[in-house]
Length: 65
Image (tube, rainbow, N blue to C red; front, side, top):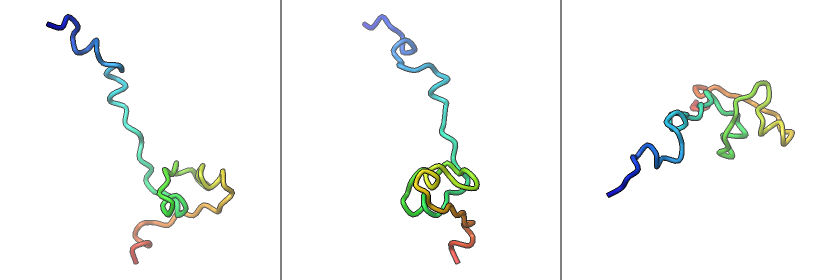
């Protein structure tokens, strides 16, 4: 009934489908509090740098205490 194969109907090639965004190992306090995507930049992430906020990273084990 259909003359095209499934591969021809896909809008993106296979290699694009496998691309997964990298996860930052630790978000800074500002990004964590605002639930923003932190790029993990050191000494200051992109979000804090743009806003002029001090960027602080606290290890997860210290946050839970």
